[in-house]
Amino acid sequence: MTTTSAGGQMAGYLWQASEACRRALTSPNDAIVKIEIEDDLSVASMEGVIQSCEQLKHSEYIQSISESSPIWWQAIDAWIRGPAPENSKLRLVTTSNLKPSSLLASCYLPTGLPPWESLLDEMNMKASEAANKQLAEKGVYARWSALGHAQRKLLTRIEIASSQNRLAATNDQLDETLMDRGVSPLIVSQVRESLVGAFMTRLTNSLDSGGFEVSVKAMNVDFLEAHARHAEFGNYDFPDLEYTEEEVYALRAEHHQHLIPQLVAIKRDQPNTIARALKNWFEARALRQELMDGAPHVVQDLKKHDKNLEDYCQTLHEEHLPAKDAEHAMEVGRDVHSSCMKYQSKLGRTDPPLQFTQGSYHEMSNALRLKWNPSYEEEK
Image: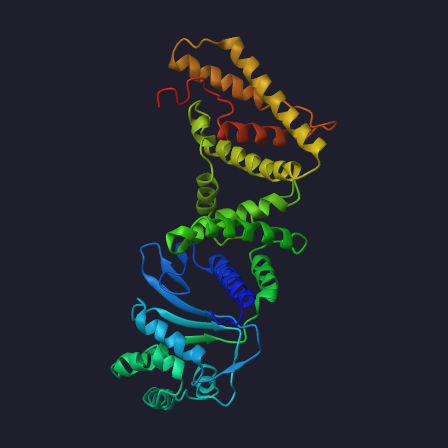
């Protein structure tokens, strides 16, 4: 990361995280995005095959780079010393411009046939002259000179993304990416803040591990969660993820712990029943999060609402218990579930939609605050 001050270093690290977050939103579902493992940023398959290695160079200042610039040589040196396989993509992502008259511009922003041999000759000359003292002292030129001619062809695998927006403009880039994923412009800033917050939580939790990686699949779960939290209640639809219905269903189901198993324990596991339960649960979570972020009296209203639901469920169980055997416990659970799905409790002075009550019940079952089948998990 190219920086000149403590503030510049921090900007560089945040820019790196922002780029990783964007990459996780735009990479295939079966990819993994990594920071400071193979490179500043890398993308690999679930099987561990490295698909791209990226050097990220953020600068506080407006500057141009050429084949003589330390930024360029540092990136080359990182790839020489790094683990990138021969078929992986190499990317230099930088806020700097390519100097129009440079060989770099001719090769990586070509208007005609890229002059690869001229760039190679120029770099060989720079290395032999040890043109930059600091690079020479760090062995950068020596490692280049030690490469065979064929290995120096890595130049043709490189892509340079120059003139990238600095940290201050990354919010706009993320917003554009999210809107491309179907997020409404009316809520895109809130979704971005929630998603970046989830990403940074994942990142900070890994600080002691020597690197960070996250699957695109996991980030899509965070994305769905962030979008649901801010979508208008009752009008929520999943953005187009370019996945099949089964894949979206898997993403949603993967985020639960006990919700579906509890339904299975009372044989309420028909596909339509589970799909409706997940939909109501997910939409209720969005509104519940909004309420929990509200004024104290609103939070208190939600707690009273939940306590009412729990008490009603407990009362129903008490009418049937004790269960005679496993079959009876299952039947009790089915009866209790059926009654609870028809019950509505006030939320403050309002009557929330029935779907909210049902989703709230599923939230409680997922957290094991209640059980449909009284013997659920007793043998575990």
